[in-house]
Image (cartoon, rainbow over all chains, first blue to last red; front, side, top):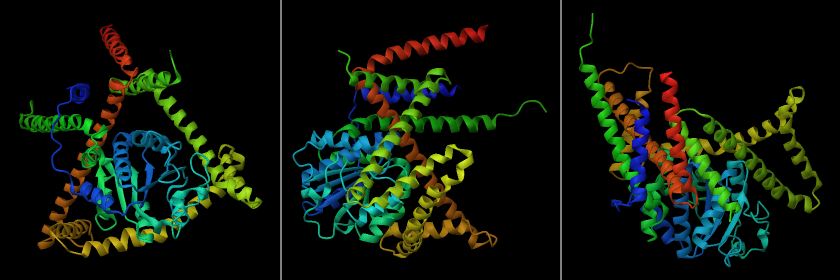
Length: 269
Length: 220
């Protein structure tokens, strides 16, 4: 069978629920997502949540809805959010997420008080280490504003990562460096809104260092339900569920075909 | 009226469809989109990196600490990558970045990814932690090659394989979910972003023309 028929089938199966939503139930909300939600919920008001945007455009479909849902939760609870991008192509996603939740970026009335975007900080782990040691490490934010003049940082006792309430990683590459440089050094717990491919690398740190995380689109949809604001992720879950069903059926049919072909007596000889 | 935003959406839609066209077969539209994407990403990356470097450097220079210019000079040595005669100069910034990176990593990795992992694996609090401990020990035993896996050790090794297979299964399932999420993201953009959806009938028409032309070629 031409493999392109399978591509066509998957395309159709994904398209139908997108064009005509079916409202399939999401099922039980995972413990990992619930624990992350509860942790943010219990943080004292005005706690600092650092959000690292490490999602490439390829991972954005999964990580972006998670980021939006987490910002919404932080806004609801009155937490402070410090954003930064650890890769160049993740920079626009911070502005996009802020616009979705806050309706604005640097022109928001609470920008500099509750929300600050540091923009791109190069060299991944080295950059994070620098930021953790001194929150004024970059000097200015992504829009050129002086960090030392911002109300956001005024009451911080140590001006390093020990002042942070939680650090959330969004991406698909690796979370090890965040745990290494923040949780194990400063005690600030880690959480994640990660692409599903990264989930197996989260579990070794869960629940002692990583307090919870959202797994791909499903995790983001669960978080949207918890913050009572269904959005991008929840809308995509019908397509996700149906496509998985189609893939499971294809795997079963493929295996039946494989075993049937093995049983056939080989001709000749 | 055609605005920059409209053109951006149309370009995004056209690029998405051109990249999807690879599923039918390798073609010119896919190659153009692939090269344009890589070129645009590289150009954008350079711009953002330069802006970030200047942002980090500027406060020091403004404070009169002129010796921070040295860091910019060391950074510019990367450009000697393109000159074979002076390639050796490129090794200096590379060495500095790799050296500092490995130094920062090694200092913490031993604790976080080795000692701490052993410690938390041995803490048994509930059924899950028992499963984790048994899974880790049995999986490690599967890779223990100094002794033949016979008798009771054979069963331990077998249990290890089961845990490994379960982990691979989770990885596979998660990867499928991730890929489908990407498809959902692009299809949502194509279906619901005005005016990207106008490109869909054009793409279908082009696909049909392509298939017909392919068939004719085969018949000839």
